[in-house]
Length: 343
Image (tube, rainbow, N blue to C red; front, side, top):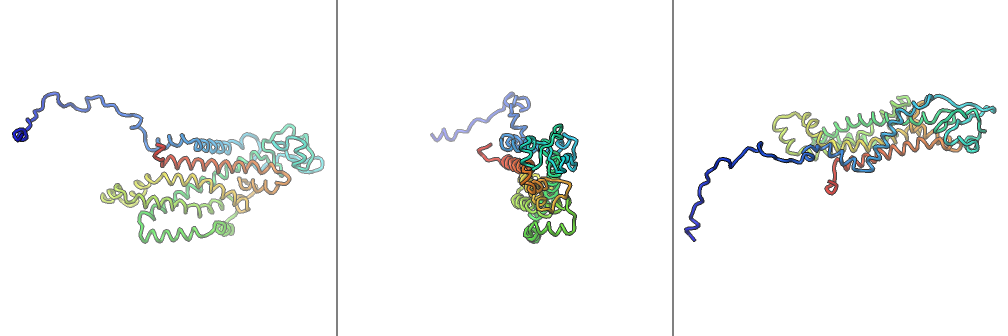
């Protein structure tokens, strides 16, 4: 037994052909997995979500209609295209609602006029005789422009503010967060009222009002992501190698925190659209004769007893915009941070 334990193994002598280079062997790899980048995986998860796809279709359809819808007919958003009848009373042109003579008389209080037999207005006309189809999609275009411009600028301001505050921390973070709390404590209507004293009503006032308020939520999201990410090993390695703070914040940390920020942007767009509609509804937004979704809802509300169909198109467009962007936001939130059971 002892003799067997004391025996040493024979020394191995390499022989020709025992080893070969890996490059000479046929190594099979999972090409689908190896070529699947992060954003490609996000796209796959996003388009597997039915609600997200439905929301994307809704938003794309409304954007296309807001761009090309007013071009379908020859009427401008401020053109008066209906006529007066023999009694010099305003008559609403034919559309979906006023097409039937009895319904026309019930809704408008004016007799049906055959002069409109050669005209078709898909959404009818308002109390001044302006084509509601053109005004609805022109108003949707104005609301979308305000929302996209505002949210893009707010994203840049809020994202930079939150990342800088969270990265430096300490006294810098304390001072910057106290300013955020002060700005967040001022009601939005107070800001709008003060701006209305120095600025004329219109798109500029709405954009400035949204710029002063909507960046706060974005900065909080960016700060939270920075506090979670700045202690990672790659950040410590960059500091050790002497990288500048600006390079670390915007070139290394920002790409790894962009997911929650994009999700916040998708949820902020419907908030901006609804805020613009509210400001225009209360009379401090878009100035007439220019229109937005909010001004169209205000006009429809003022004439709801005589022209009830007038309020339906802008309300439906506003509801679809809110629904579509919320569906897209939910889909992006799930796609950018998928759960384990969904992978």
